[in-house]
Image (cartoon, rainbow, N blue to C red):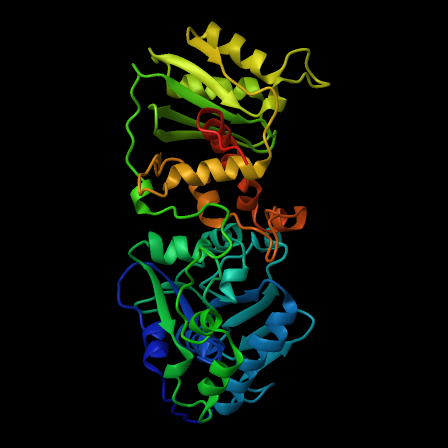
Length: 432
């Protein structure tokens, strides 16, 4: 083993060093192209293996091709620089895709396309390549695997799950977890390409000529995106978010989308010119009847009228029931003692009409705000921040089955916004 000196960038040093004493450190290195992301992540993996004999680490990405061609390659470059000799200082098993050090530390290199296969692992650290491409559900599962038994000789040991990525193009889970509402032991390190003093002279200038302004700002300067380009919902700001209190004596409006998986209903109060969404029902693999039960569980003592709006197709009989969804709702809620009224249109307007009505309520041309959403309406807010049009078209980008399979949260795209917009379109329609 050779003695080697690395000159680290400020961002790389910040990434390697832990500034807290929590048992688990969770960090993401968000950098532009050529900012040393993979270099720093693989260096940290090797350092952990050398410092804590017998530690077990996992290195992975969305696809194994990315692991093999990017991350693993950088690991071997570090080992060569350090003078490690295969067969003496470490062993590489191509069949098991495992790197084992002389001190019994080992690193598994895997893809995350089938996360259930990773559930049996007990790990000391995890490294995630292109972290923003890995679903949030996979990240949470990996976090739960940080439970390798500590050894007595591991002084000041902290479990570590760390990743590196380019900035997200949309308001995804990295933004939500590390920027919007981070826990005390969660760290986001930003590393612009322009700060990498080891790049060839003129490298960033060439990228500036190649990319448009927004792409350069995100993928070179490592700035978070505006997240509003192409969004279906326009001009929604923090002024539209409010801590809305449920008022049992006021009329309660339930506006419905009747998709079975998931079924999404938004719950609101309203005035003549404003609507206040204060809660939502978002249930997977359920029925209209069970959703009604959930409403009663939350609001058993409602004294005002219960007014039902929503998808006009919910007034059609299905092949599995002699009753329409609205008949089921009315019967159920009357049994629970509610004063029920159903208000739906004879047919659904074009979706562009509903979207325009919804957007006009958010922020009118005269500056008046007429639509407010409680933080409790998580799925509706998820739609507001993430639902986009297909680039270059007026068609909404509905996630495919494969996308939903990779990220379960995507199944909630469109349905909560559908539900919310039915109510707005009913009371404040826009004719085109």
